[in-house]
Length: 142
Image (cartoon, rainbow, N blue to C red; front, side, top):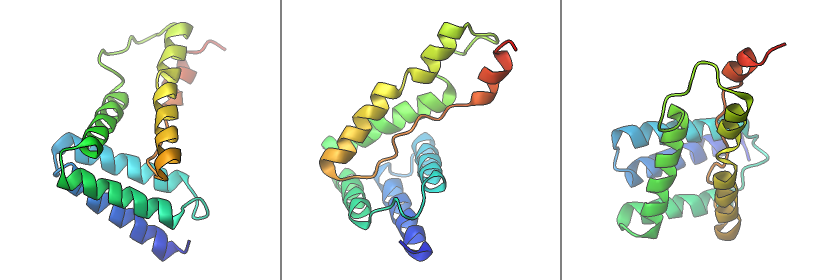
């Protein structure tokens, strides 16, 4: 894909995503951050125009009707939002190694489910865990 096609794909996904979440405040920022992260970490070779078109169509269905697509999108955004906040409870300043391992691997099954959804429906929903390695690296004794 050329650079113009990648920018156009980003804009289409973002615009239809905003319409699907009806510009609600926490959801639109979470959606924006996830799409930005996916486009920054990916390369132009990775993007498939058919998958992007299928994802835009998925977002259009989520916009039009309060059906399965809308519920999937709503739950994805809620989990991503809570993941960015660090979960329901605040973490301790010095977590144990087991707590750190649980925090970093808690979303692996969730990401696998997103990958399987992408594979079965030919979508390109970002399936990645946002991890901050700095707090973990600082708390590991040398």
